[in-house]
Length: 195
Image (cartoon, rainbow, N blue to C red; front, side, top):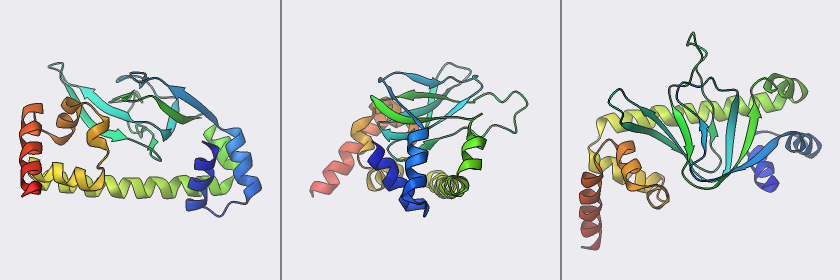
């Protein structure tokens, strides 16, 4: 897993090999079983995560008790909660492992010390967040403007493995449709592709 971290850091920074090794040696990685809840809706987060292997679902439970899936995080994606604007600092979402996963776990209290020791790490984090934020903005705009079938086609084009990695009812929630509608649309797309 350390090789993956080195590769990822090289993509974003020009840290020396010595600095990269110091950072990798100073971070904590943990394994999580499928079903593990990392952060519960209403918790005050104290850690952030970077997925090396696995899949995590972000969802909220509404007043009627329905789970509404708003994202899936997979390899080389960070899970960080930006809730400093909230007076109580609680998470609006639950984050749970959909698969057995291996992640870097960052303590938010120790983050500033790590940035002070390795200034390029802060630059890398900022660049990573900017790219992720831009992607989320684009995906949200496309989601609002598209039909359920177009949403599925976009998902199949941009994240094709996700369809086989997560339960269909969760995928349907993420796409803003019922599981039955998702099943019908998948059949129609499959039929159209075979013609």
